[in-house]
Length: 441
Image (tube, rainbow, N blue to C red; front, side, top):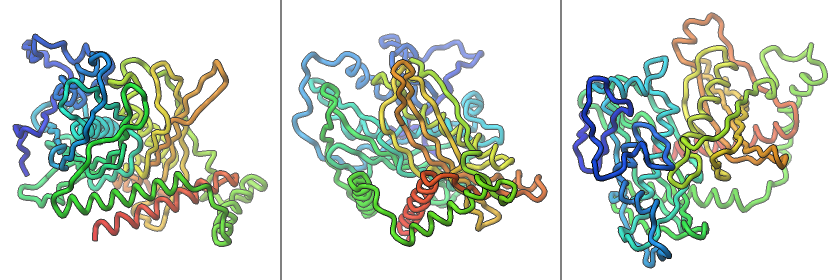
């Protein structure tokens, strides 16, 4: 499959490092270079995307005084927001090196940044009213519903990401993105999809900070209507989860809880007799900390959501690596919640653990990782959860082949709180798998 990077809706991506052999400058002389714009996290993709939205951004940086909000909502189709970005990895050696991981695949962490940036661009396109006299909306990432890696993504082959709005509510927007890479000429389009992702954005009034209505969506094709209905069902499920209190455990749930806790109690009370093929959840923990810097902020002055995704992925990968003793292989992001904004100067702590493993398939054991981000304020002795990330890894096939008698341990909780969290994530994963199966049929 060949990608046409000259399409008006396809944004070409180029490396952010200048070649030492190229002394020319492609920046327009009548506009400030993107690298000097305030409030932007820089990568090859964010630079390309933000350049295409330069007029919108310039209005954001210098909005009209007392500009009114959009007075009338428009009705748009998914095709109006559809946007793609093209990575010329096969011939741009500098770009290729910026995305290469140690196994000659594309770095998933950097790709997560790009997905968030593209989803933001698409949400902007849908919400834009093309009226320079109204104040633009503030659009923020609320959650990631699902990101699934369907096949390895090579760093030596051209890559394309295509996305559009598939559903809108009153003030929320769902964007679906497909990462496409074809290794064979004439390959079927569905076989070329290497990764799929669904992002949820919410709109806020840039002056009041309150929820703001967004333009309506009118799906046209049967596929667009199907995606809209599926997204509507997911939205209703999220609302039920937010609105309901934690239910009391039924008898069957109590039995599951007790079963999980039984082995953990052996570890805590009689460690010499504990199963050597198991490990306590608390013994799988890793963490790191950082001070959020101005270079990591987005156009609204908050820390770029893609940067948080990238950092969480790197810690999750390290946690899976230390736990398995072999190089892990990313499969999917089960869910991400952006619970509160992260600001420049915040003291951010990422804490990870292996929640549970699924060992039914010896050729593909599953390692479920939780990463929680906390914004700590030492001056007032407080700490708040800002993000919750859930990843699923397995082990790279070549790592298993080079390790004799490898094994993945079973993870057991040491407290009732840990057991409840494990059951909650198991049930959420089972529900999500059921949805995916229905969509595929």
